[in-house]
View 1 (cartoon, rainbow, N blue to C red):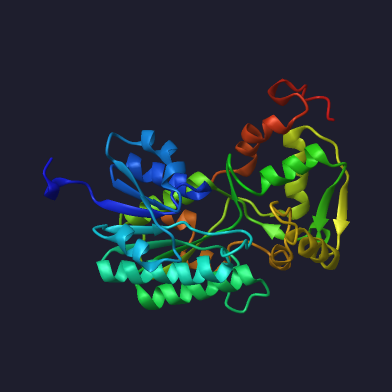
View 2: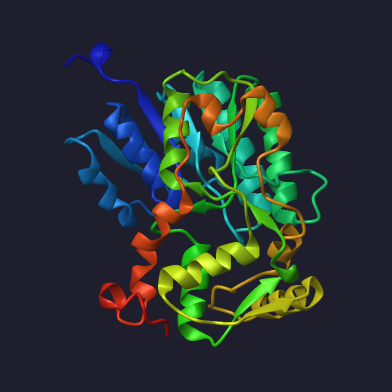
Length: 326
C-alpha cells in the first residue's frame, strides 16, 4: 500500500479514557488509522490489539502544552477530542483541561486543515452555576469560532462497563447501609450508552453528520436520580434505603471531601451544582434532528446493559440468587 492509498489518519485525544477507547474501536472497525494522543502512552498499550499491526499508534500529548498538541495533530485528516475531567485535581483544573485545552486542540486543527469532532456535555453553558458547565460552554463557543464546521456532541450521563456514575453508586450500595438522593432525587437524566456515543463520533468522521452544529445525545428514556438509584439496587440485588440529601448539605460534604488528599471524592460541590438542573436532550435539539435518532442511531436502553457490568457488585457476584436481596 502506497502512502497515497493509506486510509485517513484520525488523531484521538484522550483515546485511552472511558469514552475514548470506545471511539478508537469504532473508528478502527471502519478502517481508519488512529493516532491516540494521551499523557501516558505507556498505559494505553491495551488499545493496540484492537486493530491490525500498525493501525493504531500511541503518542504523548498534554493539552496544557501546545507543542505536543501540534505534533499530535500533524498529518491528521480528522481530530477527535475526548478529553474531559469530572473533578479538579492539582494542575488539572476545568479551565486548563476543558477550556484552554480544547482551544489548543481547535487551533491546532485549524492550522493543519483537519476536521474536528469535540465531545462536550449536556449542561455546557457559559452562565452555568457549575465551573464544569462554564468551562464546557466557553470551550464550545471558542471551538465554533476557531473551526466553524466543527461537530460538537453533548451527551447526557454516559453508561457502560467503565462508567463513573452507575459503578460509583453500585460500589456505595455494596459498602454503605444507604444511598443518597441528592436534592431529593428529582434531577432528570437521559442516560446514553457509550457505544452509541462512539458511533455518533464515527458517523461524524465518516462525513455523515453536518458540521457547525451542536448535537445532544441521550438514551431512549428519561429517568430521575431516584429511578437511577432504584435501578442500581435491582442490578446489584441489594436492599438499601434511599435517603434524601438536600443540595446544601451535599455541597458541604463535597467541599470537605475535595480537601482530602489522595482520594477520589464521591461527590464535589461543583457536581452538586450541576445536579440542580435536569440533564436531558432539549426540545429544540429534538425538533431540529440534532440527536442520536437524527443521525440514524437507535439509542440503547439502560436496563438492557447495566446489569451485565454491575453484576460483580452483587453479594455473590454472578452466582447471587436473584430472588434474595442483601
